[in-house]
Length: 382
Image (cartoon, rainbow, N blue to C red):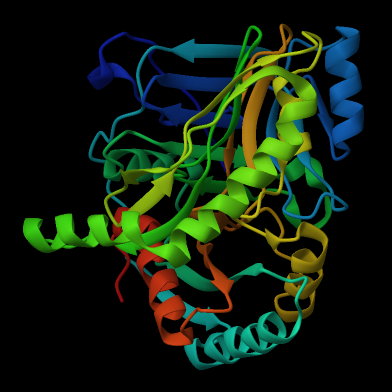
């Protein structure tokens, strides 16, 4: 299967395109696009990749971290790490018909899993939140490439967010697969000694009526349930970043941010590194997974996810890059799907945070809304 790359590097947002080619990594963001081109080395162990970067034997590390840190990563040392000043644009690439082949689990089974989690949350004083996800298996009438999906995802995102990552370094069933998506959530970013993050937790669906949409956002911003859920994410991020930073600025309250499908509560976090040798990859490992995709406390929530879901693979992991200077950016791997090596099977993922006050049907509806990022971009027949 062909992989995505950049064919042009321009300063005009309308000139950046990413047709199929040879790159194992592409990340499109509002402030620009990063491409890891070629393969100099590969690792399934994060520690080995971090050591090579620190030793100066590689120029950069790009790729994906799995949801479960005990599972293999998919990291690559590219021959070249290139930057473009603009996000990728959709150049009108046509896709074959793509439809939903299966829901795993079924909607009713997912509601049952949420009900089981609620019983645990309401009886266990230590477990505060758990994030549960479900998948849709999509089938294309003929093979598609990661580059085509990347285009469509970037073009459907108002900010040009999109990514495509070769998962082959993880080995096993990951060989030949690509993780593609359009994540709105920055796990962590490093530029020099500056560290930034923008965690998202707490959401509500957008509405086509501007007044209803505005009111929905205002209600989210005032929701005690969602503010509490968001506070757990921020507290966890603070606890993980404080030992690494000599300055850390975290606002007292989140602000509203939005995608085409959802309102989110978000907090802009910024700080200054204590030790300049700490890289963007080190920071990603330190803060992942956050309660936004796992739960609170992390260990108990992860164990319940293993029990109810099984292996998530790279969904709710992290994707990003880190260069030889230690700079880089890592995104939370949400609003995403895995493209199989056959080019026809696409497995999309969506989840939501469950707390004691959650309503199972509302939580199911939230996952349906979140699937919209992938389904709408790929014009999936439902």
